[in-house]
Image 1: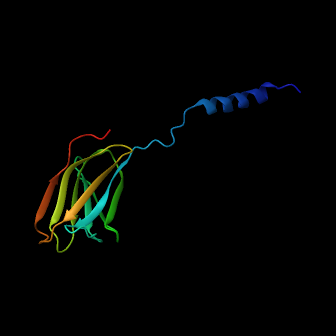
Image 2 (image 1 turned 120 degrees about the horizontal axis):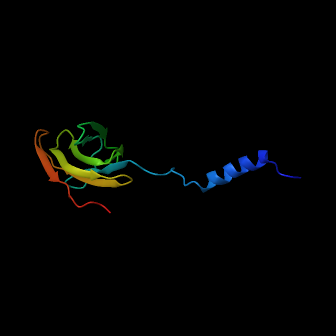
Image 3 (image 1 turned 120 degrees about the vertical axis):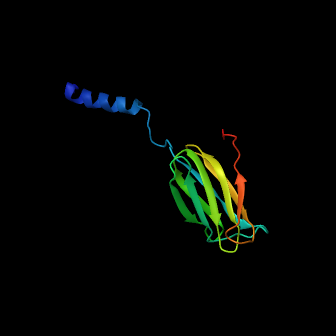
Length: 130
């Protein structure tokens, strides 16, 4: 049986497509995660965590779960400010958390007892992650 051009062209196309590198799996987003605790190390569920993109001014607010954990994912690489609030505790803030593509930054927040109007500010490190 002789292969005609009709069969050769589709076969050639399939072979060429097999050689093309796939773009699947390339991540363009990063995330910020952490655990909210009090100064004794007990977890704080239901704390409001606000993550603000410094350059754009947009923000997302999430709550810590029953284990005190939170995650803000699908963040565009940029610098972010984090504010954590809970009734009966001072507000926790950290500024300048750098998020890169395909990375996760961890933020540990130990809330101090006090009025919600009081704020504890923590400066983020400026060392880029490798």
